[in-house]
Image 1: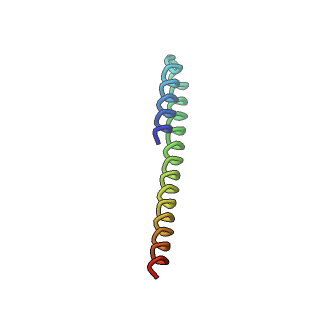
Image 2: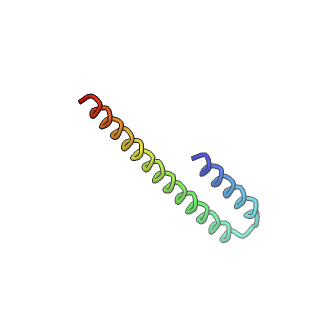
Image 3: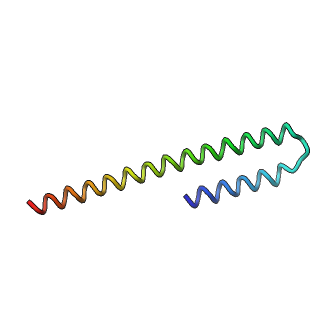
Length: 72
């Protein structure tokens, strides 16, 4: 998650630095591209979070199964 924030922040800053022109159309296109990249990053982060949650659930289930088997 920290990696995503660092990458998106660096990308945003780079786009802002290169986007200091007076061309409004190009600026609007850059803004759209930045927003698209940020949305894609947020979606990837959400999928990663969901995957981690599933992994945790699987580990907990395995631990519970092992505990039940040792109690029998």
